Image (tube, rainbow, N blue to C red; front, side, top):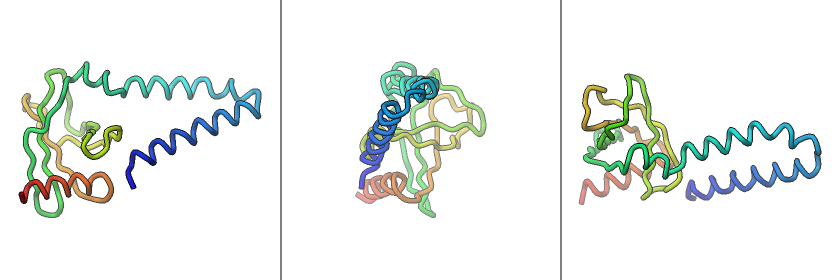
Length: 140
């Protein structure tokens, strides 16, 4: 099953629960205002057009399928993207799921101004789909 269906299912259940609670509990509306505002601000901050405005379109430059089911993913580094050791970035690959973001630790040096490297270990779900696609393309 696709992760996008689960995401929409959770989204629908959240709003159904919130609406039902507001209807049945008159004071609940006062308690939901702050968490709802935080939720909406987070969705706006993580929206695709905001990220594209800040960082532009990011492309995969190179990848390697390494032993032990690991992928080395090299992407172009946007000029405005700064990080330190131990930082992570959220990666979205629209070919797999257009709306899921997954956090991965950056494994390249901050001194490299042209690319960012990630080492991704295949587990299950999204990382397995990524590995299968890149491994299949690598063998072709």
